[in-house]
Length: 491
Ligand code: ADP
Ligand code: GLC
Image (cartoon, rainbow, N blue to C red):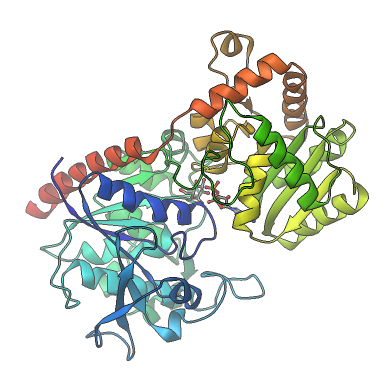
């Protein structure tokens, strides 16, 4: 593959700032692309908390022409990597502590449209080599609605780089009232139904979906699902119209961080031959969350944003029945207050069986992966999902609904897949509490057959979802994007 100059734009990247899987992807895919001999620069907003974690930063340009006073670029390096990092420093927009998207009350920052429009305009200026960096990418890889305006803005440039827009979650669209458009300093020509207008509102994600040379999403199954009304969030028509530009590439796992053989955040390292150390982590986990230490009681766990997407209502609907069995359940997550309090109530009612940890805690997430026996992801939809992929590597058997990336990564334990030794977890279909309960009961039946259980654990631990395969697929998408751009700009 030829070497390309790639500008990778994202609104979060681990370990600088992370609210979910996008952070994992943006913190690891650029490194995987660099390993494929690509020249990759990561560009992000300079959030308050990010600047604190970013280490040494240099101001590379005194002021950006055409932007509000005080908007500058900072240069550094993505920690633990050789990836060049550019930060869009705009204190009025990004210099606030906490979550990149939400205020301390948990609702969207009221100026999110202005914040991510400004970010996108600066990225477009960098992409057009108008930011004093003496560097122009061949490819701009944009992620999610926060970067949706970048392909739209670049579509207006005759000598632009090719653009790729990756959808990590179609349900988050960046929709704002029509009046907002005037405040965003965007070219008036983008206010059409072929571009940013979506049923009378401004849609940031449409900028990416309508204008990018190639669109990708994070699993092959989700790439098909979003072309249907059930999953398309009203954008299925546009996605079908652009179907030849749409593809699905499964996320990879960063096994330098998520592998129990060398995970620095867990007490005991292990692999498939030393599962007694997984049992030691289980005891450490039970102690940590205040549950009785008991080797023989299966521990179910979930680590999740507590939002409707994740099927939390299914889980809450089936847990009272599951708790009739001799099991323990651990929940780490935060999100909708009604869901947080439902878990807190459950823990109060079942103090020896349920532990609820409200909040975001990277270290505890690793301990849970290493110590639990089963990991639950009953999502209503799941573009890819990373925790089930991590769970496989940690020998923590995933129980997932057959949707999106969950369907693409977990092989259901049936008579046949147990016989041919391909089973890695439990997969269920219907998004109902009884269907989830049946899946739980199938999992418990399997757990009670130690030889089969060990086999499923072992098969899961052998799965390889490393980034290398997926990074190569992105390189092919970049070639396609370049070819489309050349075709379209000739017309
Ligand atoms: P999504 O991006 O939809 O939230 P993914 O499964 O792709 O779902 O990725 C979630 C990532 O965020 C994983 O790395 C997971 O461990 C992490 N995560 C989610 N909630 C928490 C939490 N409360 N504490 C720590 N890590 C969390
Ligand atoms: C989104 C999706 C999740 C995916 C992640 C990273 O947050 O909800 O399924 O794994 O992005 O692509």
